[in-house]
Length: 99
Image 1 (cartoon, rainbow, N blue to C red):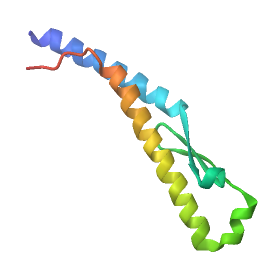
Image 2 (image 1 turned 135 degrees about the vertical axis):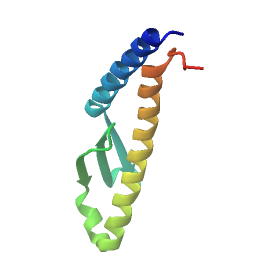
Image 3 (image 1 turned 60 degrees about the vertical axis):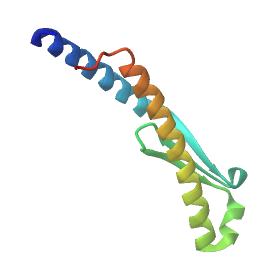
Image 4 (image 1 turned 45 degrees about the horizontal axis):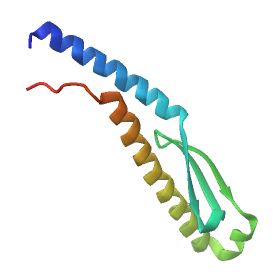
């Protein structure tokens, strides 16, 4: 493979990855804890968009609220990880790797 073709391939890949990153920034996932007691809305780039905490959760005390927020965050992050794998996989699919 000549250097010019390799550079064109690298440029095409960079454009696809940039487009995928922009797409991820506009996509959202929701992490849910305790049947919706706490909901974390996160973008595909891990940016926190919103937190919803049901009023009755506040009676559980600070450590109870913190545990539910952590559980919802972990759920959202796991879903964002899956989304990132899917979107970035689609962006790089079929791109031959240099030997």
